[in-house]
Image (cartoon, rainbow, N blue to C red; front, side):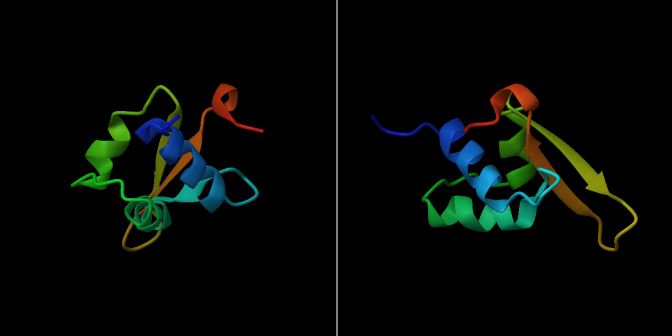
Length: 77
């Protein structure tokens, strides 16, 4: 069975996530492209999966850094 985009996204976020569960979206984007997921603008691609992930932006950093993590009920073991 072929993995869906949401499966690959969840896998990549889990792979990039730090101890707190948050993954830097820049790193996520790099791995998505390595897995042949084409998305155009990453922020728009991510918005399609709000049912499985949540996002935040660290505005204190310059430039701001965006993060994503799997919602609690979507964490794969």
